[in-house]
Length: 136
Image (cartoon, rainbow, N blue to C red; front, side, top):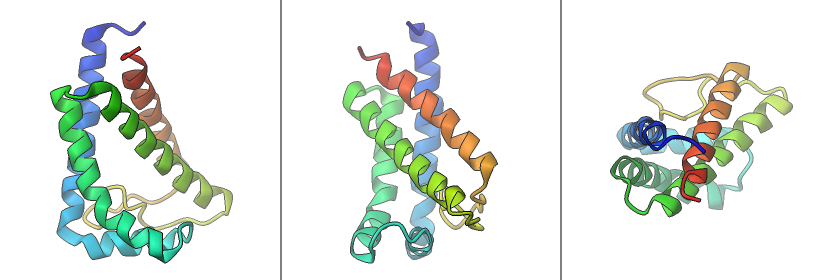
């Protein structure tokens, strides 16, 4: 069992990251949509609405994680978002494709898709699992 104060700190750190990631994408929604399309995983008819709604979801999840409201549900959604990131980054690495920007922080901050990014996503996954698990 993870101590409650540790979960609180993880929840706030993860919430701030999620809220920031969502917020920064609002400055260039079209650019973020282009990045999502470069992954060539989702068909355009799914990728476009998904990429335009993602900043809203991330911002809401981040703020709700910080507040602690609807903990189980929000941490579950956060976990699904991280799993989605893991899938996208892993798919690129397995295919041997290196993208200039993962889109994780929109177009404002370019973070390449590489093994270092995969490690970062796995760390976020461990945090998301820890937060989700704390509600049981």
